[in-house]
Length: 162
Image (tube, rainbow, N blue to C red):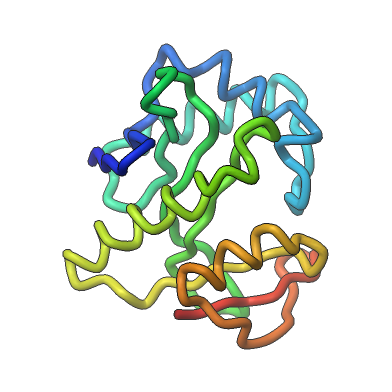
């Protein structure tokens, strides 16, 4: 799967992305608002390898590459998650701090949602930490509405639905 937007390319992770991706997952700033927090190198490497081996699956996170620079700046996609005992398709995205505030998260997520909508898949949720106001603003721009507070792995979240 490859999605192109005006300023971004979303593509499956590749082996050449490994060190950059591990750096992302190990960076407390990149992992801000994550229930897991920053990973140590071994956990980050395992996470990358699992995502890489799943890169051909229909639902997965994609590398977000800035067209103008060719630089990997984060990830965005839809994956299954278990929430309140139900399997849900969840939209997720995360960008480097230097890439935030430019509309990239909205653009990437809009491209991902359009891709799935073209395939008839529209029942996608999202969730954020209560303090993650920037991500909540992105979701609202995408037409999501907060529907309730909940928890995932004892981590408080706000669930959003389109």
